[in-house]
Amino acid sequence: MPPTQTKTPRRATTRRRSAATKRTSPAGEATRTPVEQVQYAAERAVLIPVGAALTATDRVSEAVTNLTRVYGTPETAQKRVERDLKRFERRGTTARNRVERQLKRTRTRVERELRQRRTRAVRVVKRNRTQLERQAKTVRRDLEKAVSQAQERVTSTNGA
View 1 (cartoon, rainbow, N blue to C red):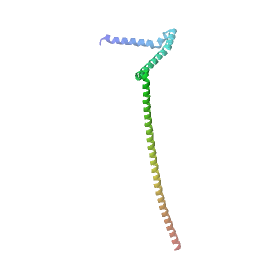
View 2 (tube, rainbow, N blue to C red):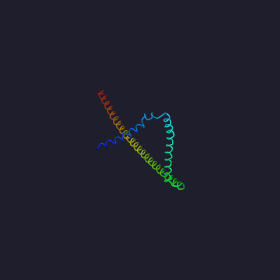
View 3 (cartoon, one colour):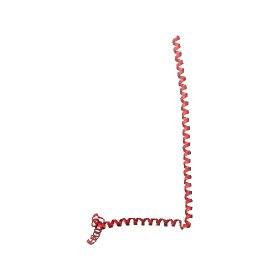
View 4 (tube, one colour):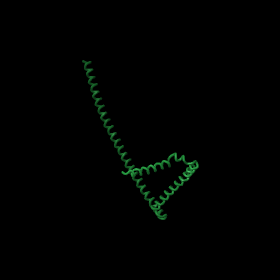
């Protein structure tokens, strides 16, 4: 590359950097006189609220323009607003009804599952109790039989 092409962009970049550094550096602030510093602070104190107010005004204007575009003139706006409100109400009613149906289905399902579980538990308890009673009866019979046999043996050995 020719030397002139590489030096020119570097010089321009260097100039831009040094200018930006002078504007933003604390040393640049120190070069202002106290009066200039007070003037700068006063200007900022006035300009910042003015800029914020203008921005807010622009946003309100945009909102009004958008609403006018959506709803039209004030005469038709009322009809459109009422139509939209009715539509919103219908959507809300539909959503509420849907939620109520889902809740009712869920409640019914939970109640059914609880009834089924309770019925199964009662059935298992009855079956276990019946089995336990049968086993107890069998053990009692066997024990009574063993006792009576032991008594017979005792009486037969004593009497013989």
